[in-house]
Image 1 (cartoon, helix red, strand yellow):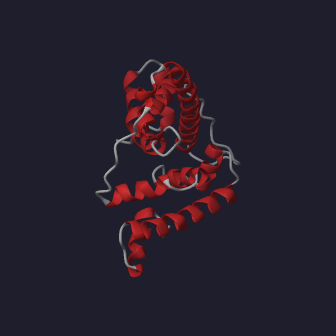
Image 2: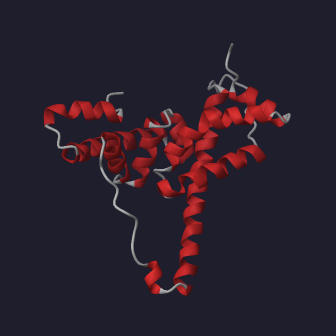
Image 3: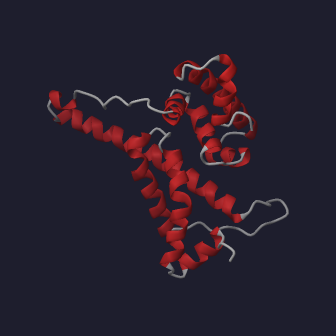
Length: 206
């Protein structure tokens, strides 16, 4: 049995089929969370951001235009671009909201309640090392690279989501991969001859 497309599921959801929306959530929730955790909202705010994105999808799902000679991407690519773009916007909104909330709290809360920081994160596996390396990248490089590696978005889709030119996206991904590989080598205590394994892990070979 052929799996329903995004356009099929959206049409069913507009007709009131709750199982269709559940299928969209199953399809996109994981990839969106993987993307959101590397946005300015951070891992702690990723779930709230994605929940808001899914609520917006439920309340006002986008119209997916039919394919034309100029636009030959499948509807799935268009919905994915819309979801990643909304995720990015929601993350920025959350950061601005949190900044305003912190200002209010700092004006009223006792100083001792504001001291301290998050617990240290143990670097206990290769994936965590990759995540640490990604978080150390410049924001525009990290965003493009996460969309490419975890979101599996094309350069064109990343350009649409971030508002960058396709050439800029290609440069950001290339520079981000170079920087990430350099950071991972000492972090994982790797010999230079083993860097190809790190490149494979980060997707640099594609």
